[in-house]
Image (cartoon, rainbow, N blue to C red; front, top):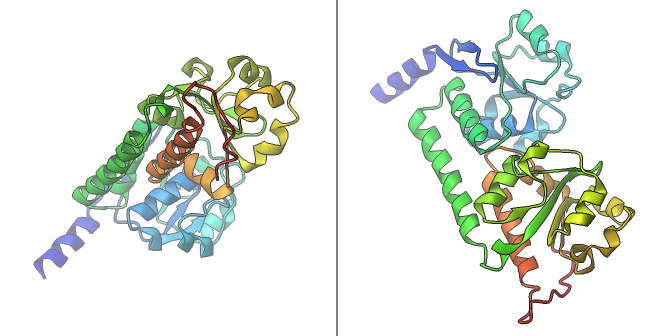
Length: 296
């Protein structure tokens, strides 16, 4: 009985957190009606066992399965302000770049702007959301440590041969790639794997296809939507990675997992590790590379 009373007392206390603009946001009480307009924030809420409090989501939030029945209220570029207000949320989670954030705040809603772009951001956002949702810190930290332990296990699963490879990771068919300074690039760095896109290009630069041809990556990772366009790019059919079929084509659900800086980053690391290990297995005793098919 005392424990229940203490938990209730904790949830009733106001907390103050910092958003991405370093502005203080006061959360008067444990939120019971949450709107999330960024998939990684949605996944963070659910990983903190607060999924049942979500009452509205952006159109791209699709994990876990239970969120698919939650009403949709647009996206970061076109949030439906009227629909959000009608849901009467006591907390709105969104990216700093989300349009309409100031208007939602002016309408009296509690708005928390967070957008993880790298590993440090993901940890900061995890802790901030945990505080905002009044999740006990000991529970939040334990869950985060479990994610990190799984991430480290994925890193350690790489074979010595896999660690010597250089990767091009495409995040959209424009094409845009993930550089060394992106959270995916940081994962590759932890694995001891090279990235043909340097940090100086920014986290997710638009890439000149000729850059990739000149760089000759050992392995290419890309979403299913990129596969067809790759074959149309000048010089790409001659890439050793393409000829040797060291191309890891990701299903949409796999792309979502890999490209969201949130609680499933460790699963994304396992996905990359599997691709890299399969590609490394094409090395024969003479150091020549042989086709292995398209790993799925």
